[in-house]
Length: 196
Image 1 (cartoon, rainbow, N blue to C red):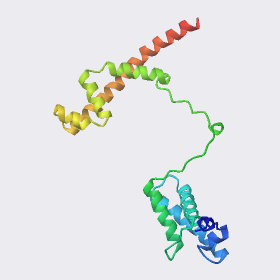
Image 2 (spheres, rainbow, N blue to C red):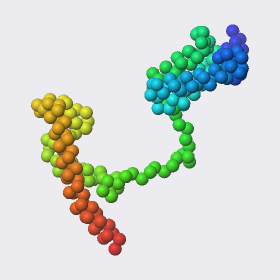
Image 3 (tube, rainbow, N blue to C red):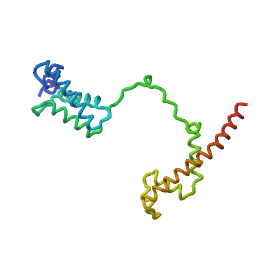
Image 4 (cartoon, rainbow, N blue to C red):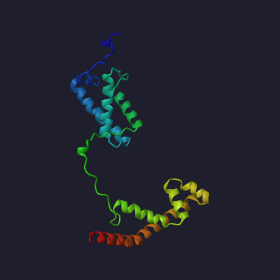
């Protein structure tokens, strides 16, 4: 076998479109129709970016045809729909090509009670430290997704566990409201001392 037999055949754009229809005018119309069909298919499958996924399906299909793969169905559109099905199964997500220079600075994080993120972490730890040990264990088990197992271990029904978590959340919110006033006052006193 010579090296020329192993080379992939390079098809022109016209030859690729001729796969959809031999007439160039109808081929272009069928291409647009196929693209719209793929976009609808991805919309029906609730894809995040149906336009991008349709382009990816077309690009993969034409790339495979460039590599020498043959379409075995009567309707070439079926070939591309098959590729679209595989993209949905893969859970394909469009990759964004961005350089670092194009990125916008991150928007400022919303402040909780005028505390910056590191202060918020300290504040949350203080609130959690003030919880009784049993409540803290219950909350951690629930947050980690092990709430039902923890509830079975201590003999709580799932509904009772959810009610206790709800009440604990309300108690934490009240604790935060009362603590934040004194904590922020202390912080502002420290800031004033640093300024002078």
